[in-house]
Image (cartoon, rainbow, N blue to C red):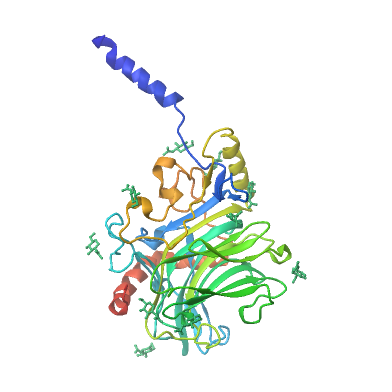
Length: 399
Ligand SMILES: *[C@@H]1O[C@H](CO)[C@@H](O)[C@H](O)[C@H]1NC(C)=O
Ligand SMILES: *[C@@H]1O[C@H](CO)[C@@H](O)[C@H](O)[C@H]1NC(C)=O
Ligand SMILES: *[C@@H]1O[C@H](CO)[C@@H](O)[C@H](O)[C@H]1NC(C)=O
Ligand SMILES: *[C@@H]1O[C@H](CO)[C@@H](O)[C@H](O)[C@H]1NC(C)=O
Ligand SMILES: *[C@@H]1O[C@H](CO)[C@@H](O)[C@H](O)[C@H]1NC(C)=O
Ligand SMILES: *[C@@H]1O[C@H](CO)[C@@H](O)[C@H](O)[C@H]1NC(C)=O
Ligand SMILES: *[C@@H]1O[C@H](CO)[C@@H](O)[C@H](O)[C@H]1NC(C)=O
Ligand SMILES: *[C@@H]1O[C@H](CO)[C@@H](O)[C@H](O)[C@H]1NC(C)=O
Ligand SMILES: *[C@@H]1O[C@H](CO)[C@@H](O)[C@H](O)[C@H]1NC(C)=O
Ligand SMILES: *[C@@H]1O[C@H](CO)[C@@H](O)[C@H](O)[C@H]1NC(C)=O
C-alpha cells in the first residue's frame, strides 16, 4: 500500500486535473431582469470599473482621458473649456473591507475636478474640466450605470452619455446649480436628427426629472438602458422615463463619456463654481452588445460551447436604492462580475486591464485622433499627476 501511494495519488490528481471541467459562468451574456421574467434583455459584453479600487488611473485602459480645449467662442461661454489629465484624481480606498475612506480621506472614488479659478491659455480665460471616454467604441444596445456624488458648488455640468455623433446620443446631464437641500434636477436627452439639443429639444426627446435628494450629499446611481424597443432612464434602480419611438433611436455604434465641465454660461453650466468642484465617481458598469464582428464571433463560440449548462446568462444585480459603502460588509458592496473570482464570470471578455480577466488585451485603435492625443501625453501622465496632486490637495476637500 504505502509503496505505491505517492504515485497513485499523483495519477489520481492528474486525472482530476484533466477531466474536471474548469467552471465558468456568463458565457452567453448578462441580463437585465431574469430570463424567466416577462421582459428581459441580454447583452454579450461588459465594461466594469470599480473606481474605489483604482490607484493609478494610467493603468486603466478601459478609459481614454481626454486632453483638448475649446476657445471661449467655440465653447459658447464667457470662458473657454479645456480638459486636462491633472483634473482626474484617484482617491482609492485604503481598505474597502474596513470602510470606504480613501487614501486622501473622504469617500473613496475617482474625482473629476472643475477648479474654481480660470486658467490663462494664449491670453484667454479657460475653465478646466475632465472627460473620460470609453476605449470600447463598439457599443450597440446596453445598460449603462454610474455611481456618483456630484459637487455641492453650483456652476458645473456633469454629463454621462452614450455617444455616436450629435444626432445619435443618449444623455444624462446634471447641473450643480439645479441642486437644493432636498432635490436635484436631471436633464435626460435623446439627441436625434429631428432635434435634441438640450435647450431647444423637440418634445419627446427632452425631460427634466426631479430626484428627491441632494445629489452632492451622498452616492447614487444613474442609469440608462437601450434595447431595440425602448430607451429607459433610471436612478437608484427606479425607472424615470422611457422613450419607445424607435425612429428616434441611434442607428450606429458608439462609446460612453463621463464629463465634468463649466464655461460660465448662465443658460447651462453657469459658473465658475465658487470652489474647486469635485465630481466623485465610484463605478461605471456597462453591459452591452458589440458591433464588432470578432467580438460577435467570440460570443457565439463561447456560448455555443456551453449549450445545456447552467448559469450561462447571468442576471445583472440591479438593487433598488442608492449604492451602499458605509458600514456594510463585503457582500453588500456594489457587485462586479469582474471581481467575482469564484464565479469566473468574465472569461473571454475584452477588457483593457490585464488583471481583470483571462482575456487578451486589445491593441489601441490608433486610427482615432483622440487616442493619439492621450498616448502623446501618457508618458508624462504620472509626472503630471504627481506634480499637480500636491497643488490640488492643498485646496481640495475630499469631504
Ligand atoms: C475560467 O473559465 C475558462 C473557461 O471555462 C477556463 O479556461 C479558465 O481556466 C477559468 N479560469 C479560472 C481562473 O478558473
Ligand atoms: C425589466 O422588467 C421591468 C418590469 O419589472 C420592465 O419594466 C423592464 O422594461 C424590463 N427591462 C428589460 C430590459 O426588459
Ligand atoms: C477607516 O479605516 C482606516 C484604517 O483602514 C482609518 O484610518 C480611518 O480613520 C477609518 N475612517 C473612518 C471614517 O472611520
Ligand atoms: C487665478 O488664475 C490667474 C491666472 O492664472 C492668476 O493670475 C490669479 O492669481 C489666480 N487667482 C487666484 C485667487 O488664485
Ligand atoms: C447638499 O449636501 C452637501 C453635503 O452635505 C451640502 O454641503 C450642501 O450644502 C447641500 N446643498 C444644499 C443646497 O443644501
Ligand atoms: C428644491 O427644488 C425642487 C425641484 O426644483 C423644488 O420643487 C423645491 O421647491 C425646491 N426647494 C426649495 C426649498 O427651494
Ligand atoms: C445582444 O446580442 C445577443 C447575441 O447576438 C442577442 O441574443 C441579444 O438579443 C442582443 N440583445 C439585444 C438587447 O438586442
Ligand atoms: C416618432 O418620431 C418621429 C420623428 O419626430 C415622428 O415623425 C413620429 O410621429 C413619431 N411617432 C410616434 C408614434 O410618435
Ligand atoms: C452581510 O450583511 C447581510 C445583511 O446584514 C447579512 O445578511 C449577510 O449574512 C452578511 N454577510 C457576511 C458575509 O457577513
Ligand atoms: C475568446 O475566445 C476565442 C476562441 O474561442 C479567441 O479567439 C479570442 O481571442 C478570445 N478573446 C478574448 C478577448 O479572450
